Image 1 (cartoon, rainbow, N blue to C red):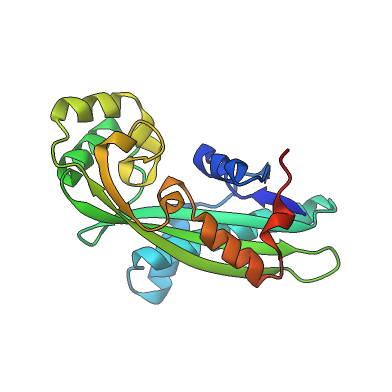
Image 2: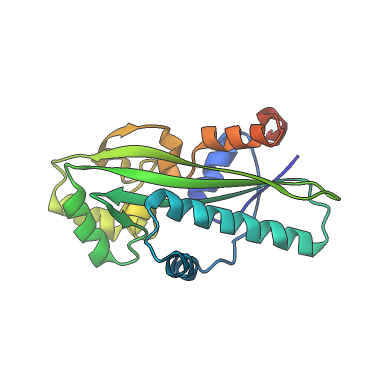
Length: 215
């Protein structure tokens, strides 16, 4: 059974590898800001965090599934799409991109708790048949240490790690020591909820061990 990850995220790739799966990876061609703006304009409202991440996860998986079909390759398996956003006090935080934004966020987050929302879309691709899709959102709360110093924040931001991850933090690398507690599936905070992906695969008629392809 083939697996294609609709992402080039090192964290998501690592999670699948640790779970016994070596996927093909394809970066989805999705303008995230444009997609959100278009839907919010059409519905005349702001999407909440769960809607936000689920919409993007589904668009990403659908884009990659369509590209695989266009290649004419005999792909038979699943495409996994995901998206994550961190929410604290009702504010949705994506990737900070700049050191200034990351530093400001960390100073505001220390000693507090927020929620990491992760959207998942799994599309089962079967040659000669219509694609089938299952989707879900997982969430985990994250509590940051209250005694994180400005010097520690400065050093962490200078590492570059928090600039390109949702919420400006990781739990599986340099940011881990600054986090006191995670409530929920820890892999959700790393990049995607493996237990959720498994449930979606089962919903599509697959047994999780059938996806194992690493020695």
